[in-house]
Length: 361
Image (tube, rainbow, N blue to C red):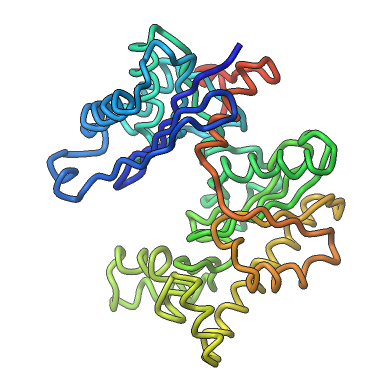
């Protein structure tokens, strides 16, 4: 039986939607929202009817009837920590996302919109897939030197898991049979140690761990950060922006656009070359840390994300880590296809749907 899926991926200023017939996209569209449109709403949750109506109008414009859908898939939002997998949207999930119990973000609308439209489509299933809060860390990976500051697992779980499955398939094996180090190269950079289907360790780029990235500072000297924060020269918000948004390449080179950095390198800009090379070096060191988490048993090192299109960057990383394991590059991140694939695995009986209301932390 053919499955027709509606995919919903809300972002801060847009809502990406797609319809898939099995693995094949029927259409993919980005519904953009201006600052003026969003300014009318007191918070993200209040945007729900506005975004829902735009989705329904887009479906009508593309000639897709709700009755033709067999499932609706939303981008997972800020939930409590869960293991990886495809989750059926349930009452517990909806309640936590509605009140932003774990933080407010546009992605929280993904499950809410999926549920509403799935009900309107005749009560078909609604799912989310591998939200950013996927947490499969080993106990030893959670501790820091301060009990008050345990490590959290927040990373590019959707893309990392999807590309890990693809890399495993290219090896002729199942995801649960291989050990991989997966590097997501984007505005933030996360490096995950995937041991037989579980991400047993990963840097939390959201909290400032790991390599510097195009707009994130990454790990910085702790006491230096304390002195900066208490120098009274910057507000708490300003320090936060220095770490996320104005750190990394932005701080060193003045841009988060890797293409511009490479143009400057080609023009002989030595400062740009050193900063870009330093980012590659820090990514390579994080790969080494992930390899330790896997006991040195690594089948592949996988580079993915938007910056994986850069042959300069991936080349620098590869030459520093290929002694650990062969390097495979899968540029870009197709979130819509990854969301569809997660739902299809459940609908085809390849894996069970997870139940959020029963999932422990």
